[in-house]
Image 1 (cartoon, rainbow, N blue to C red):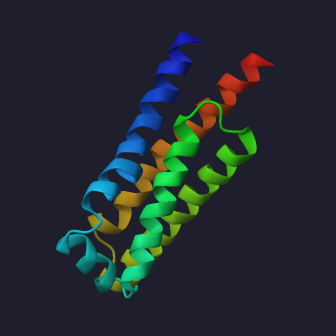
Image 2: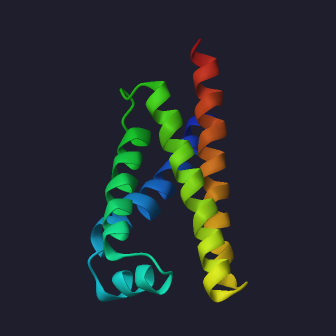
Length: 123
């Protein structure tokens, strides 16, 4: 049980850093704005994405958040990573940046699997 909690919180913390803290701190930089523009999205899309990423991270890390809300947060992040892969692949072709979201998606999957593993142990 202790090992499962360590794995869950390690994976979830990595997601929180990559999808919550980093976007919150860097979303208004010229590099971030240019990245959104480069992919063909309007600037307001990047702003909305950051808001939803922060809300999703809060849903994942706050234990009192209802399980259904956590499921939606996991789904939202999964869609985000899939569409990031598609966007980067369509605009820039296949390269490391195209597949980086796949790595983070894998970390999200670990968090999700261990979230359910820990909750099944509680019942």
